[in-house]
Image (cartoon, rainbow, N blue to C red; front, top):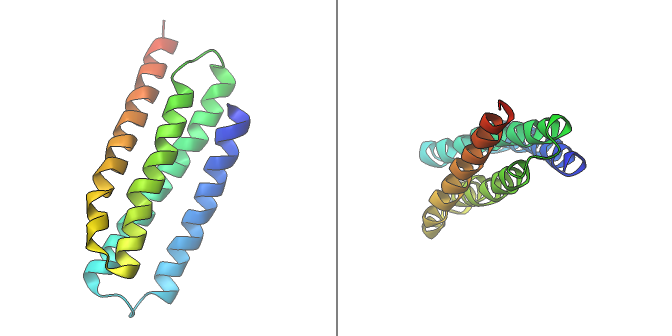
Length: 125
């Protein structure tokens, strides 16, 4: 599991830097304030959950028997694709129907954090 989520998290963080720089330099002045705010929200949540993926990989080193770390990692990956991905496309294309996909990514993030919390709670006993 560590060999999976640690590099996925690092790659996601790298892409977060790329998208953040792209937004700050290439999109400034090209998107209206609403679209720019949407893009910035996508980058912000992208980073949070890239770091969550790195944490899942590192925690797996100390809790290799945990059955909840793997689902947590996959839920963060799904959340990144659905939440941040839909917001990136929405900001760049204006395709409004993608706004209906975004909450599904948010639910995946919430479920991922719940799995991580329970995994942490179980490690205390």
